[in-house]
Length: 405
View 1 (cartoon, rainbow, N blue to C red):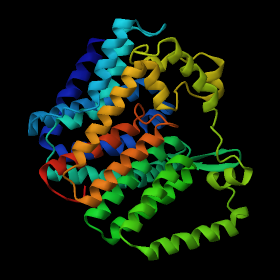
View 2 (cartoon, rainbow, N blue to C red; view 1 turned 120 degrees about the vertical axis):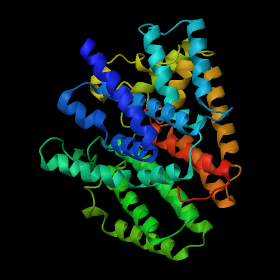
View 3 (cartoon, rainbow, N blue to C red; view 1 turned 90 degrees about the vertical axis):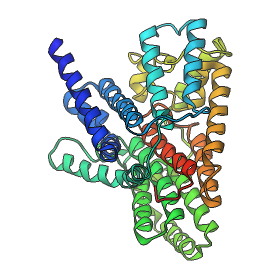
View 4 (cartoon, helix red, strand yellow; view 1 turned 180 degrees about the horizontal axis):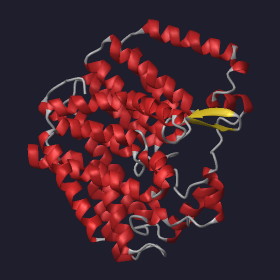
């Protein structure tokens, strides 16, 4: 135990030192490692899924702290992390959900607040640009890494769901889809700031990766925002090309059934909830039992026990609906507070952006709100990538800079 603690302390010191010397490289490395989903491929090899997630989020905390030491801290009065602190206190006052202890609630508080902590740090322009490129390139890097693992026989790149292909690269398809959706957001913002052929090519690549994951809601949101940006820029030729490709896809849909999104439409199951409807009633019941202040941060992890037969059936105990999860953990108080802070944070953070960029960032946050009704957008590792990018954009707005971040 002493040896492990010593190695951990040594790693912490080395990590802080590396971040202080090479802040942009440290952030890029962290983002790219997150996007390879080590909680999946590494856990498959050595185990410790939850431990790996905890370590990755801890690295994010160390990164934020080191950046604050290097560049200084800043006030961020509407930061959504405050909502989780308030929910934590309310949960302790009310009493935690049966099976959730103080240590578990505290760990969940740290994990929930961690993605937002970059909002309290002064982020220089070079660092923001590096992070922006890492976010855009991350899905392609994950696919290449996944291919290397597959060639080595360590992890499959894809799986099949009802006979349809779902690309997961080095992780699982829903997580690759989440990272790729953030990459599309970042690519659209970069295209608004400094349009060139590289951004257009990367945007096309990320849309293809997103299609290959078979994730319906992320693909729909990505296409809506992409078409919105093209319309705003009066890019009618790309829209016409996209419409032509869509028509061709309809004509040859019978030969495209290996793509999950196409196959679900063929089967009439595009609106299927993928077993979410079995999980949601448990969270609704928890909210009804304590509607005002909920059961404490972290309750979402124990409402559906990991040992239950339902967890074994659906393969997860997560809510796949952040409104239900936050409602169970913080009640209406926590849910309203979190939504209010997210809205105020977005309005304040984007107000100094150029009009087109301001419109896009607010549309991205609306898309995030819609996505949160069907996925774990706040607690999954995808949230760390999303909010470090959002923090970088808001920091550039505060500086009045419009670089391609």
